[in-house]
Image 1: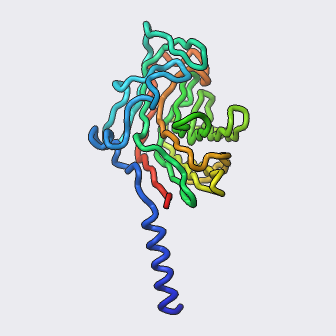
Image 2: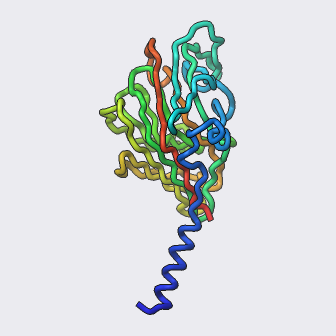
Image 3: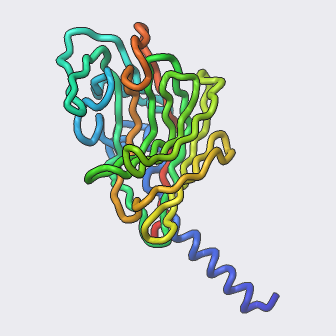
Length: 249
């Protein structure tokens, strides 16, 4: 190879490397200060959503680089309201949301990854997901466990137009690595590649997701779509080595 050609390849490699930026580092759960730099407690819109748990910052703990969300059975809570319906609150639990909003730019995208220990018991609903900052959709469920013994990977283009893949989740008592690659396709749609334990599980398309800001949320919801009644003992959902990389220009 000519020296000029080798130099050009080195420049190209350097350019690609410089295009990758760490938005949330793997150290964000190392301390309260690190957490506060990248995360906030609860959902971006508050403490309630679509299940029987109300989020409470006291249910989120950090230790040795790991976040632990704990759902505990409670009584006496005021009902939640979602979709015009009243939902009985039977648990206090934990949710965290990234302070950064994630918008796929032309020729760019993101990698979202981490290691998760998530329950699949009836009435438990852990999730690792992206959802629209304004309006809805987009929504990408990068990992969702709905009390069925399976893990779900979903992309919502509308409430009735969606892609999903359910996979057996045989060892919920162990950590599993999850990675989701979101990339621009044509300045309108995005590709979504879902990986578990290093293997590609499925590839989906987010229609008209390009240029739309999304929240990143990690939460332990209960009951709702995961069935009821949920467990009477405490439920834990743990996350470590969480990282977000940007490939946006």
